Length: 201
Image (tube, rainbow, N blue to C red; front, side, top):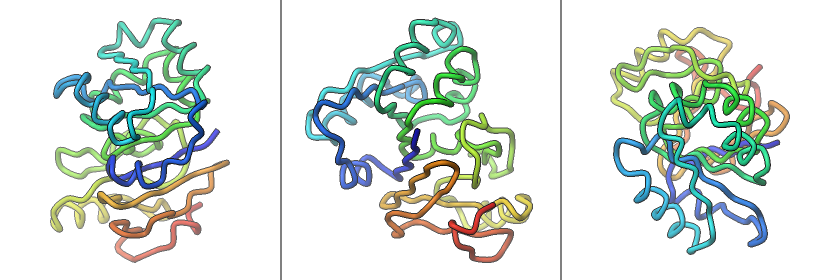
């Protein structure tokens, strides 16, 4: 079970090295309001046209389908397509899907990665709130205004780190240990102080 956080599809494409035989599915829940079909097509294009099975799961009713959870659990990798983190959190917290995601190898693109940890940064104003707790570790967020990030850092109590992942950034996690793979557009702080991600409790 591993986790990869890519700041954009471009960052994901630059990292992607899975063999063609890997069973890859994509949850497009977060893109439900902006176009799940188009988001899936963009993902496939970014990955060189490889086969990726789309799992729409647009709402809580779909998330309760045991067949969906079983498909997520069977896949080698589950890509979480970018979009609305708040909508994704609402849908993915429903059993049995939440349990399947907790045990899956995940690749999260863009802002949707913010739902993974126990602490989520609300994109509407930057305040810490409750995440899904699928992975332990830092609070993840995307670039925002200087004022909003300052507010987030002031509200997020150490020792939990805040990791801002921009378009070129890439992180990975294994067994609860996070590391920065591509440092461009990645900023790690603990409280108001720059920090190292590998020092996160």
